[in-house]
Image (cartoon, rainbow, N blue to C red; front, top):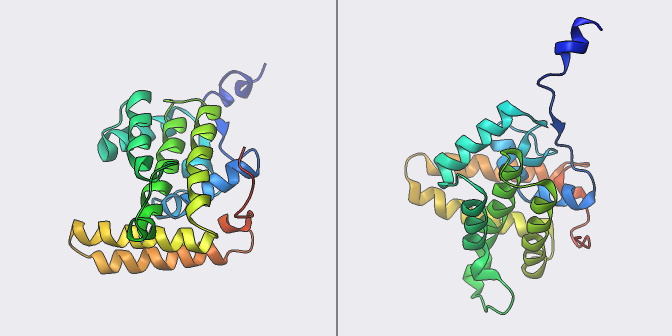
Length: 195
């Protein structure tokens, strides 16, 4: 056995390329986050592979940015982000106009939780499909989803303070670029039956 047979694949992790159109659709909902943080939209949570280094990075981000340090906290945060939009709840139009900011982030943290080791891939997919169905209920296209996301992002960014307009403009340009990519995140049919 050669040296690579012993040590070569020690840190090689699982590929994070979406396994099907449902997973690809889900990654499209938070493509703008993946790209803005230096990741790549075509991977779950923007990470090319699931390995120890990526898992540790995701756990740090979840803890620092979301106060999430385990499965229960992750699922509680997803519930918090989606509760207003669940079946049977009447939303005002102004809430729907910016709701994608919360809904897209719910899918994002589910992907992060999977890469971070808090949930299994099927759990991530199932929970994301639930969020995706809410998105499909309120929005009729990728363009509507991204426009709503941008409204929510702009509101959040302006409340955060300094250099908000610069960041908002950059995020708008990023969303426009992602929408216009021929094989980009918005190339999967919006009305894909999510399963």
